[in-house]
Length: 216
Image (cartoon, rainbow, N blue to C red; front, side, top):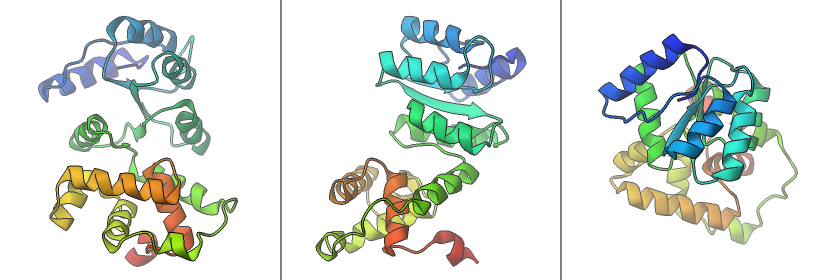
C-alpha cells in the first residue's frame, strides 16, 4: 500500500486486515514503493498518484519494468483524464477513486486477484468514451462480425453494463472460468488486448447496445 498520508494508509491497512487481506508492507512515496516491491514481492500494490520524491505514475512504470507480473491498482482522489490514461499506459491494472465505499473497494480488490481490471464506474465511462472516439481501426469485415457467438455477444453486453466476471457468471448461469474463456475467445477473434477495448470496439461496430442510452 502506497500513500503519503499516514492516517489514511494505516486506516486502510486495518480495514484490509479485518477482511483477511494480508498487508505485507506500506510506503509513503513512489521511491519507497519501488524498494518495498523489490524486497517484499507483493501480489498486489495499491498506489496513490500524488506523492513526494517519486509520484505513483513514475513508480508504477518503474515497478512494472522490473516486475511486469506484479498487479498495481491506483487508489487516488484524482479523477483527471490525464492521470487515468497515464496510469493505464504505465501498466496499472486498475484505477479506483478514494471516495468509494469500503465494500465496493473490497469487491474490486477481490476482482483484481481474480485477474479482473478494477476501475471506478465514473472512470470506466471515460475509458469507453476515449476508445469509442478513436476511428483508426477499420470496421470489422462481415465474416469477423459473425465469428462472435450469441453467448459471446451476451458476455460483451454484460461487461459493457459494468458487470464483473462473477456477476456475468450468475446472470448467464455459467462458471466464472467459462466467462474467462469466453472473454479470451472474444479478444482473440477481435484481435484486441483487453475487455475495455473489446467493449468500445463492439459499441462502435454496433454489436452491442450502449448501456448509457439503454438506461435513458
